[in-house]
Length: 298
Ligand SMILES: [Zn+2]
Image (cartoon, rainbow, N blue to C red):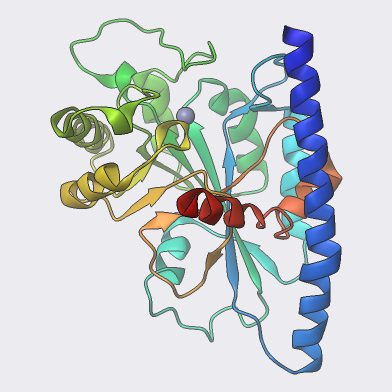
């Protein structure tokens, strides 16, 4: 069964990669060339990258969520060395998505990268953070807040795939780092959160916000959907509670100057070699947005 599943996943990965290569070389590149010839400046894009786990262990059967530190470092170096691009902080992300960005800023930049981590795994401290620190890179960590409920005295909590989450002391250590910001990834990371009653969703979104605000002493304005799932009800509640944006797992880039409540992200997996990574951070996987439209229509 496991072998069958692996083969099916590999087939899926392969066909997704093929479509992305075709999309990149037969649509994105010719389009870029045409716009250049017509002297039209394309709209600047923000690629929000979604990571989960960075650890020096090969997590077989963990849905490819783990990226090895050596690979993560290679990816960060690629972003840093990419021409006409910039890795931005949360503050810069807010400025660029507030409907009135100063377009004169960063005239040499076409693409912005914003690095995000979901779940708040313990290996963030040992895997990702040393590399972020080495290159002085900003990031935001969306934490599952269950371990920080004060009535809980357990030190060990796991995410759905069995990896340990940061405890309160470790989270506080991260908060001291000026480049790393923290936001909510729900209270308990439930698969079916969207299907629960309004009261249960309110409780989850509100409590996780309050817990992180108490720990950090700062307003928590951002929420990332557990398992990438959201619906109209959850979005309405998030707005009502006071979140400024909800980060999804919908694969696409975001346009500078547009204040969208839903932020699209490009998920980076442990299955991505550098070629695939380059395709992803250059928009080759953005065709997936059409799948979302098709799902809405049919
Ligand atoms: Zn998650």
